Image (cartoon, rainbow, N blue to C red; front, side, top):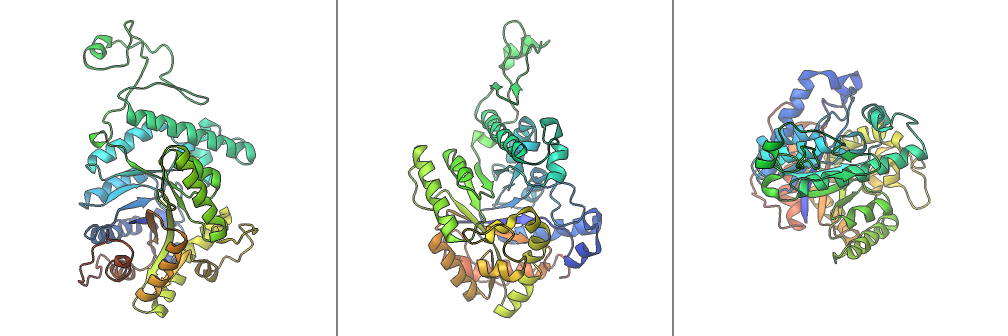
Length: 410
């Protein structure tokens, strides 16, 4: 099993966010860069698969300042040696797919292949509708027609990105895109004929290609957060994309895993139950159960209940038959459902063991809300590395040495 770190790049501490407009503060953003760099440099030494960051815009509140995950991945990649970096995920409906294919390919080159990619449909209309207005997402901006348009754009943009990554030159004609557009007369046709491809004898562009391509032309590992429906999971598994589920109830999630397994088989990949799948959970480990609970109450619970629950993310912790809003938005809800796993190393080992009985996944993404105190987060990573993960995977190599971060005060 691979273990990855899934960051929501928050800026500041809880009290900074509560003061307002934390996302605009340079001092807090710089602190975030320094602290996450130290956390990743620690993880980089011990066999963690990689680090993923979300894409969100306009988060002046400070809770998820990740405007350009590809740029952030390149930055953190330059500070490390072993881990892969990628996006969890790029919101395809609001993006230009050719530009995005180029950006990720450049990132893969700059990180010398230490790269992966993730793709999502998007759920925040404040920015998806603004940035995606030329694709029609600004009107009507909500409702069944809007959701179907997002799905159409997501699937067509993914197809275009795959063509760009797997061909020297390509063309595409779909519902929303024609690549290249018609009758592009290329004055440098002789150069194109001599040194390139895609231009016909009359100087008309018939195909285009991105440059550079992926590092050594090797296809990236691909992920889809958060896959919360059977339809999405089947779509991903048919295309060798790893669905990352945040659903916690086995009666809901286990059938999703079976559906994914069936979809992979239909696509010619015979996988074991859980292979090609991923889950994500928040993990808070401290020296005692009491200290871990104290930290956890102000960690993910704060951002989840304030910023996620209004968008229907309560579906992740719902019981069968419940709506996303039936359970109270509390720390206890997250803890009881197992979305937030907290405790001493022995307690967390027991809780992870229970999770993996239901979900023997290929990837486990540790959801990190980095507004928690840096020293506590470093200690959490240390305890996970030395006393938890070695019980579940041979990918993590403990050192049995003690390190605590010092990039900033907790």
